[in-house]
Length: 506
Image (cartoon, rainbow, N blue to C red; front, side, top):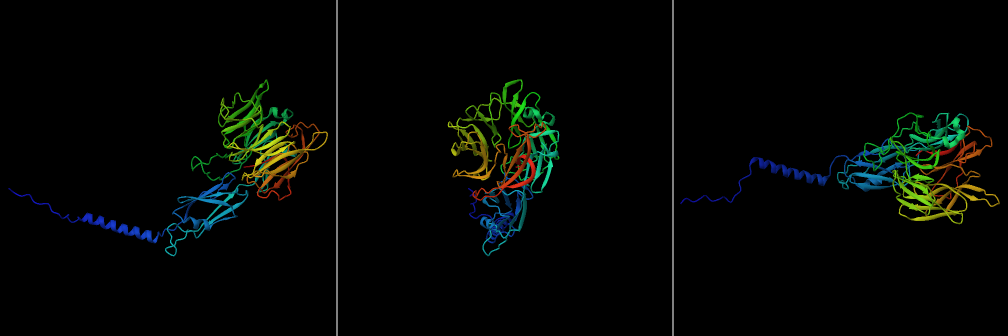
């Protein structure tokens, strides 16, 4: 019987291809080890700066720097320079650094961002240190600009744009229209306004139509964090030249009263009434590219669109209702305690509301979206308007106090209220100006207001205040403010402009 050959206990010597593979693995392992020990000699650099060459507004709160290599975070933060200085906080996500401003950047200002001598993550002290390639970025804030209604000469009743940074002024609307009220779009490229034909001026707001006019402003806005895509900003911008007029809503079948514009510019809400049926009264919603629709079953008074552009706060009966901006929708919430909502903070977290008390006084309340309610002041006078400082630390309000005497007289004044302590500081007294328009700049550094002079002459073509009385003259004033130090009193500056209802562009 033949014995089968025994198996060898020795592995065969590797073939030539195996020897090559093993050698490559060994060499690659040595290279990786040397790289990790000595670091890469690739120069770290800034790959992208989101505000480079852009025009920044108050809603732009953070820029992002992206690097080509993981960076030593502390060395980047220590060597980052912004001129003029902009206080902010730093956060990291991998190779991306976000710098979030703690205060809005002042408008009308150019800024330079520098980064030098920062090291990457793998640099060791004294071993193959490769500092970052020096980087210099530039951006600027939007021009300080506002619009107002002219009251003299060829500007009477027309919407005027004034660029305070460039000291330029030009009318936006034609001379045949008398503007009653207006609201700018968020990029300042268009303005929504109500107006009547000059020949129909005696009818006032009963004949007013809704228009939109382009300002000619072109803003290279940075892409906002949270945008749906990185190739488009959150709000579309008009490319039309200055003064391009568009009719939005006529007054053929319904009279148009108060209106409001959503933050995203896609929704307009108008209070309308049927002149043939006064019971047919209430808010209508206009969406971009759609026919207007009534919010059925929702009669009410004063209203504001919420900052998220999704809801409407409207006075109803003995309270405030929060409605979704959809026809036939049920209220989301009802606040029976309050009668008027004056304003929201920019992020929608806070609201200024008015409560009418049983003793004929009024209370100004701070209401949060978490349900907290804080009474700030109680007054026997009036509470006309309120605006939040961008930091949400101060509320600027136009108020009044009663003058003792047999006749009812009010003394209006502009005040600043500390939202933490509820301490009120009077800034400017506005004698006999209950119709004054007050506008806080988007960077929170200045307040615009008007002071009007009424006329007893019955001029049908004259511009009129909210009470329907003709205006003989009106002057604009600029008051610098400092939310961090309300006790510092600065005198208001008269502007060489004859106008009323000034409003800053965003």
